Image (cartoon, rainbow, N blue to C red; front, side):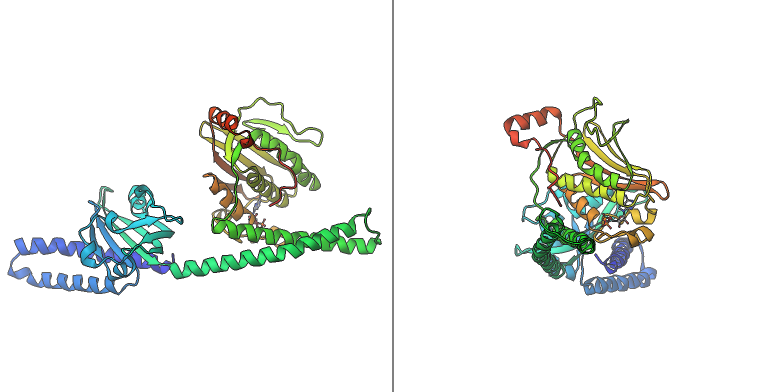
Length: 441
Ligand code: ADP
């Protein structure tokens, strides 16, 4: 939602408060005050008229709901979007007028809609991906901002909702995503063919080339790999945005999963002469080329995820840790409690400034420093990682100290051993298969 909406929201709250005070003043005035105060009443009436004019001139829908959930104000913008007239809506419970649905047109639970969320969290709630059903049963893409009104004791006395029809913007966004997705898909295919032929040319068993040609082809091969990864990332991020990311969740034991994954990841660390460690709970275990299996007795951490997708995320975090670290090492951690399994990837790199931390998981965001200027990247990896982790109702975040290093955390809902075993006995396929290095993002 644009800043203008928030400004409008602020103005609207002030105007509505003026209206409420005016109403209160009106009753009191008519009962208790006499002739002398008529001028005051007239001026308040003028203010109310001005408030109404302004509220009705705003394109955005504006609704005032009292603490009994009853609609007290419904401006012309709201009438235009929702299709209920002002007279029909005022005096009704907001749940009779506002129906929210998800992308599959299923009704959203009352507890999860903007009015309830703002009321529960006692702070302004904003959501630009809300679907509202109009009186004529048409689904409208809207952007919502709901602010609670509170008395001196922090009790909620009402809610002000400001909302806007964003159908056009959403349709344009989806066209853009469709274009990126089609273009990336079409370009990825020839790039994969070029990469394949370059690999063949570089294969001594298949082709004979001189040293100079080899060095040129190696460079071409590496650039083609970058390009292929970029198209793949663009495609995955477009899919993640419009909910088309495929996922086949299975029961996965994360300790076992991470140990197997480590043997693939080890090479990335070795290439940069970085050490690599495992940390199960507080037990540190060094991963060497001879041994990757931990002998530490540890709890079994079961989760329901697509192992290929989780592999993609951990690999991305690990690759980043190696990419942005010059000396020291990378530690993969696993811990948890009854409810949560926590994976961490910690490095001893340059760290990330605090002002960038909150933006890392946004699309195309790259920290602007000497490392990112010299090290290639797209700023899509962490965006894709967040989208994948959110598929499994998990959370991903980063903590970092400049000059010391960064740690990226993933929290996933833990499945009880009993439930995991039950699921695996029903469907043996629900056990995660051994991960193959060919599972690329
Ligand atoms: P990319 O690495 O392709 O630029 P990502 O989305 O994976 O994109 O990461 C976004 C940005 O976050 C990177 O450009 C980098 O600035 C920063 N970053 C990610 N991981 C680390 C890390 N381990 N240490 C320092 N900076 C990091």
